[in-house]
Length: 147
Image (cartoon, rainbow, N blue to C red):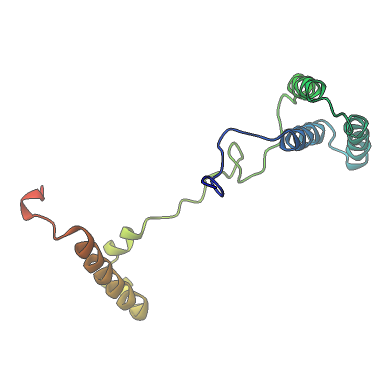
């Protein structure tokens, strides 16, 4: 029973392909129809097209239908598709840069004095991390320092 729980990379089921195609088709319709009633009407027609081919048992025919559907979605894609703001390609993607933790080491002591409990706990945790690192990897060799 080896391999149970280990995901197989690159293998996508037919059901997942159909679901993905349906979602892409709806997103494409969403780009073309900006008025909600018009979009919903087209979405219902799209759902009807998917439901017509729901009970096809022959996988060769089903594969051909998926290939045709993907080609149709590709050919009908919008010239400027909508993107969610924080998704890749969106206007706010990676806009908020989260500063790394080491930036706090360069705070002025007067700034650190405003948050004494936080910085006391932070220094304690830094020492614990250093001890854990030295326990796992050993103390660093002073000759390896470049400064």
